[in-house]
Image (cartoon, rainbow, N blue to C red):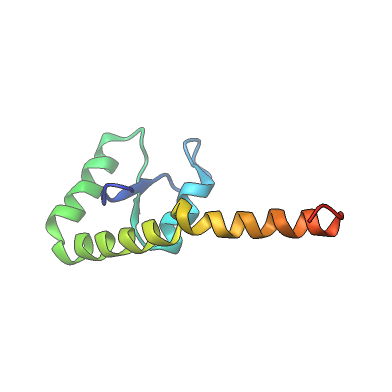
Length: 93
């Protein structure tokens, strides 16, 4: 994702499913579900991207949005605020 490369995910309830990865790919519409144990599934996904330039463009755009929104620089503020809130509730802030 960091390099602007499309994300392929395993279908829900598949043994290779990574729920957190699938949820991010679905939320940002930047992945194509594949079965990693079936080469045809992988080939079909790559073929879809190569044969549909608008799909590839859309996925690349969505990848940039996800990268910016999910960056550590952005999340750092959220984490710091949570920690500060917890510490102040316990008299440490």
